[in-house]
Length: 186
Image 1: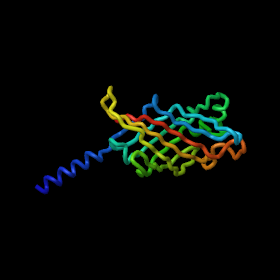
Image 2: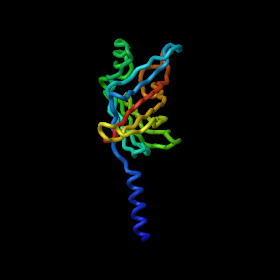
Image 3: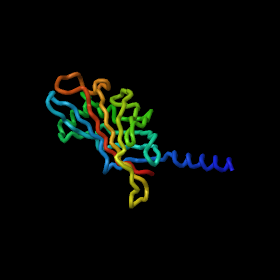
Image 4: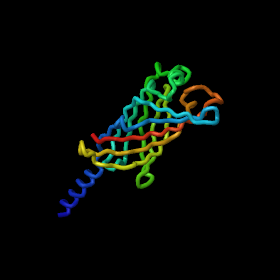
């Protein structure tokens, strides 16, 4: 009897903690950023071409993320500025076509919040960063009968530490990131 109860408890624990693959739904996700311009305003932008995969439980705990962003997909609603950002003066998109992030740690900080640490590679430089995360909700999609999760990740990156753009008084050093995700369980 003790062996049977132990086996049931073990199997239940495995089912509860089972990890599955989740993919971002690009039409309902956005990788956005903002930076101070001329010390008086914020300029916003986003990256339109990205792939985000996560491995997580059904409650999106203990998540591991892998992100790849196509640098040339930067969009600040200004074609001339976007061209300059893609140039060697900033991202050098031809030489560094992708920005990547690979998580290295996950810590639950509240009922629906967590801290995600990982390595960001941008402009040929890899540095550890920390993102604050929130699970906005998890539902069963009526069409696919699979789980979907809404998430928000925020963080700050110092662009100079990655060699993006020079030291100039016209731009802030810190870039605020806001990543809104709709993830679909595979």
